[in-house]
Each structure stands twice: as structure tokens, then as C-alpha cells.
Image 1 (cartoon, helix red, strand yellow):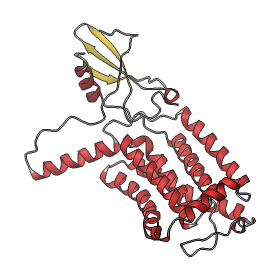
Image 2 (cartoon, helix red, strand yellow; image 1 turned 45 degrees about the vertical axis):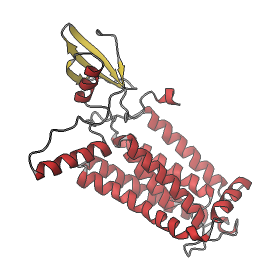
Image 3 (tube, helix red, strand yellow; image 1 turned 60 degrees about the vertical axis):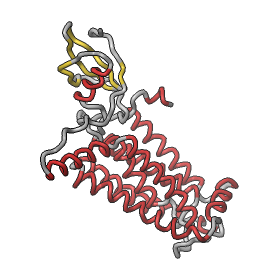
Image 4 (cartoon, one colour; image 1 turned 120 degrees about the vertical axis):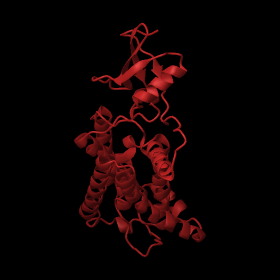
Length: 303
């Protein structure tokens, strides 16, 4: 058994225990809605909110990449030209698919805000995503006005656009907004939903090059801008840890053969993982938990 000063590491599940059969239709709907919230936004308590060192790192990296993209945007290299030519030259039969995908990106970002506010009842999350999206749009437009209008970027390549616009956007503002919204929401979401958002960003990036709305440097700048803005929002307002609940940890300890009770979150938390306290028949237990959806759990080990 474990005593104070000793720890056990457990990968706690993020899915609540299966509820008992409901007694009425209203209870069935409530149960389904609760399950949707748990599987999308995570069942754990979001508090306490933290300002992570990793967000400072993301902010610095994002600003650095954005500065490089701005400096390099008027002089596309061979790789950028070849990448753009390859994707932009895909068959015209794919145009309808990529147009739909390009349009759905904005709806996905808006949908996240609406679902978080109305269905998930995560008002703080909805506010942060709205702020991230608006700031990304404003800064993207501002950068485009200051950088591109005085350059010859649109003449650097013979761009074939498929959306009726003869100019090339820098940065890709729509992608920047989507990246900002998804990145802001990331600590609140379960891992499968985060992966879906990342896949969407990749597909929209491909669609942008296929439709000829931007160049590779414009995509790089958009991703860096959205990423940096999300880190800035997290630093400004704090972000949740995505940690498992006390009930989940108690259930997991039972599966490991530890008959623990009175599981609760410790007031002082480490930088990685979650520290909880519990008791058994012989005394106090200290538990270190790494949840599946916990942001930054053993970040350097993953790296």
C-alpha cells in the first residue's frame, strides 16, 4: 500500500460509469446529453485554471514562425512553388469537394462555440473561443493589409484560383480563425474531439492550396497566428487541466486492487499530472494521476 510521500501512477479513464436505465423519456434525454458532454468536453471539473509554461513556449514559437513567414512571404522557394503547383493542379473534379470542405471549416469553428455554450454549458469556453476567433480575424486582416498590399506577392506565381479571386491571401485568415478556435478549445476537449479538429485543419489547408486562395507561406503564417493567439488567450484567462474526476480515480484504484475512499484533489498541484489524496483502512494514500485528456501530462516525455 502507498503512504504519504509515495505515489502510484494510473491512467484514469475519461468515460463516466454507465448510468442506470432511466425511468422516463426525459431522463433518457438528460442521460444522452450528459454522455455527449462527457465524451466531447470531458467529465472532469475544469478548476483550478492554470497558466502553463507550455503556453508561453507556444506563444514564443508562434510569434517566431509568424515573423519568419512574413519575412519570407514575398520570396517563395522551390519547395513552396512545387507544393502549391502539385495541390493546385489536382483534377477539377475535386473542386466541389474542396469548396464544401473550405466552407465547412468556418461552420465547424462557429459550431464549436455554439455547442460549447448551448449544449455543453461551457460559457467560459465559448467566451474564450469567440475572443480567439475575433482576434485572429482582426490581426489576420491587419497583417494582410500591412504586409501584402505593399508587396508583389500576388505576382510571384501565376496563381490559378478557383473561387473567383485574383489575389493570394496572406495569411490565410479563415484558417487562422479555425486554428485559433480549435486551439483555444483544445484543453477543454477530449482527445478524440481534438484529433478531429486537427484533421480538419489539415484538410482545410490542402483545400486552400487547391483552391488557390493562399500560398504555403500564407498557411504557415495562419497556423502560427492562430496557435499564438490561443496561447495568449490561455495565458490571459487560464485553462483547465482536463484531469479525471475523483470518482473516476476511485473507480480506477478499485480496478487496481486499492480499496480507496475519500478521494479528493490536493490544493497544490504539480506541473505535470494530477495529485490526489485518498484513504484506505490503514491510512492516507497519495496518488499521481495521468488522465487521457489531461493537457501537458508528461509533455517532455511525449516530446
